[in-house]
Image (cartoon, rainbow, N blue to C red; front, side, top):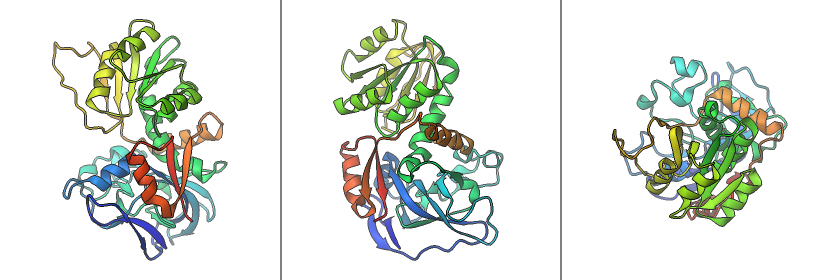
Length: 346
């Protein structure tokens, strides 16, 4: 079968012909119909040797949707030909967090030589992918694979981030979303669907602000020297109750803390390499709370799928054949993807 494999750290992944996997034990084989392309894939590709615990080579792709193709002899809980979306973060499977479906915060994560599909284990940029068990699958009945695949990370991570802030986003509250890409445009929709707050959007691209508007943002603005003042004014003067930063650079973190009201909530989702210096007293908003959401628990993926199935969540996608993965990766690297790039086997 065809696969896009990472063979050398820091080098572009390469297409390869590999043997189709056979499910053993409780494993489930999935025929891939769509795989989302994520900035996390770029971080993995660009990693220096020794930074990640993964062993080369492996197939990339952690946002995956398809149909069950075969079951191992001990597998149950899914049926052949059932449409599914993969729950991407795979923990140890034995700790309390994993038992509750919170593999994303597995207690043994730092000891594992992999973190999930396409992250040290063979992922979905291929014709088929094998998962450890049916617990890594959520039914995607009623959704196209192209819509379902990005929900497993872009949708789930955004939903998980918003869930941690929802208690502060009642009527009259303001949320700011920084970075309207694959995750950010879904965060805008999730905020609109699950809270009563005002949603303000920030990006460096006019086309991203147009996407924010289509996604339901009340207001969008380019990142400029006066953006914090503009956002404060739009939010009623006191500042934002919550900020979700899907970029994570020094500039966006400075904007986030500059617009946040005292006692507000900041969720840093993007891995842009920025940092905050915490001092007390200091320039940070007094009483603010910081979270670093990572993916989300499996039960929330089912909630995200239900939200999409209801029509409240729609992923804006650009479709590429799997053979065009190098082009899609290059466009993502240059910031030329609208919404989410999705690879489809050809």
